Amino acid sequence: MVEIGAYPTRSEAELIQAVLAAAGVPSVLAADDAGGAYPFDLTGAARLLVEDADMSDAAAVLTGHSTTTREEQ
Image (cartoon, rainbow, N blue to C red; front, side, top):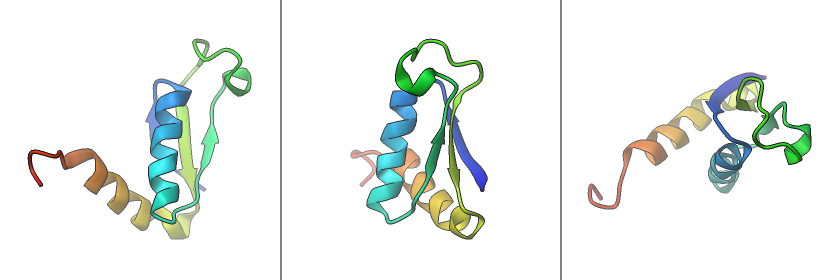
């Protein structure tokens, strides 16, 4: 598995994970926060991981999602 993104909070990572899931790209959330019990205690970041084979699809989804705003559409 490869890291597709690192986010400061579990909530933010879960939001992006939902975007990936909606596009059919499975991902795994890795966070050192006791399963969300201590959301303020991330020692690093909440990381999203995807399979190597899904890397280009995930990158395309995230690039389109993060750079397009309603005003630009």
